[in-house]
Image (tube, rainbow, N blue to C red; front, side):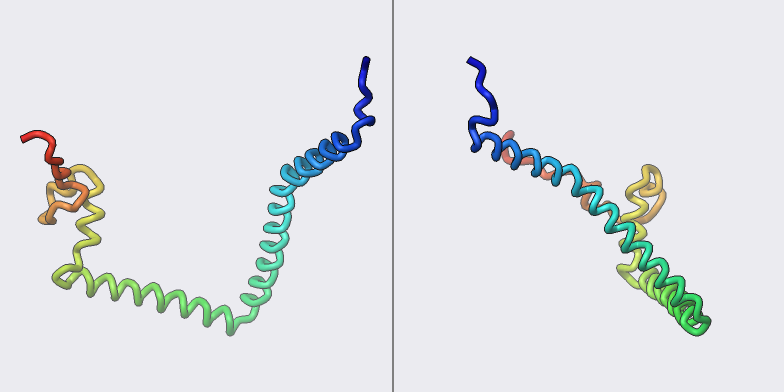
Length: 120
């Protein structure tokens, strides 16, 4: 008694639904990659066309340079303030040996964990 799989239409529809879902599922990453590549190419062409104009290119370069020196100034003023070396001390504490040579206070992750009230 062999049963033909086409005798049960519900089973055939279910298999077709699963098959179409699997095709969609495995096709979707490729669709997204193609979309990203197309968007990237469009934006790259747009940026090239914008930077080809001398006045806009100069303005963007000037903004980048001013921003860079602005952040250098902020870092310099913070380093001279009372609490300005917190970032420097935190960075030094990540490397073994540098924190011992500096006059920085121990960072929260360097202090021993408080013991729970288990043993008295």
